[in-house]
Length: 230
Image (cartoon, rainbow, N blue to C red; front, side):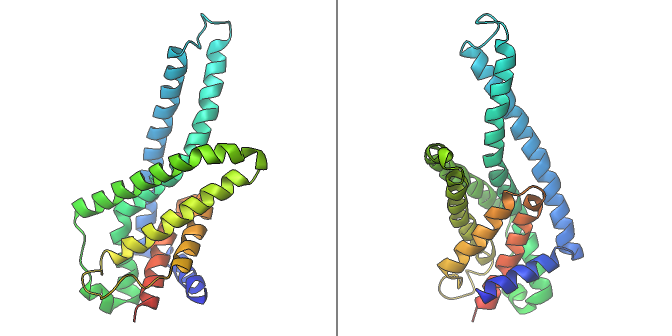
C-alpha cells in the first residue's frame, strides 16, 4: 500500500514536468474532440431512432419536444459511460510517450533496455482497451439499472468493474515495453493493481479530475512497476 501511495504521489508531481504536461494537454484535446463527436452522434442517433419508432408530431402535439428530452437524458447516461472508454482509449495511444518520459527521468537503466512500440502496436492497444471497456460496461449495464433504486449501487458496480479493467490496462501499458527483457510476469500484485485502477476509475467520475486521471494512472503505474521490479 505504501508503494502505491508513493507511486501516486510521484505520478502527480510529474504531471507538471514539461514532457508529461505536453502529453497531458494533447490527450485532453484529443479526448474532448472525440467525446464531442461521440456525444453529438449519439444524441442525433437516439433522436432519429425514437422518431422512427413513432414518437413524432403525428402521434401527439409536443412529441418532438418529449423526444428531444428523452434523447438528452439517455445521452447523458451514455456520456457518463463513454467518457471512461474514450479517455482510456486515447491515453493508451499516448501511453508509450508517458512511460518513456517517466522512465527517462527516474529509471534510465530500464529505459535503455525497453522496446519502443510501433504506431500499429499502440493503435491496437488503444482499440483493444476501448473494446474491452465497452464490452464490460455494457454487460454491467443491466445490473446497474437494477441497482438504481439503491442510490449508490450503480456507481459502486461501475467503480468495481472499471477498477479491475483499468488496473490491468495500466499495468500492461508499462509492462508491454519490458516483457521481452524481464523474466516472469508483471511484479504488481492483484490487490495493488485493483486499488490503482480504483483510484483512476474514481477520478474519471469527477469533473475536471477526469482530465488528469488517465495520464496520472499511466505515470503512477510506471513508478509502481519499477519500484516493485527486482
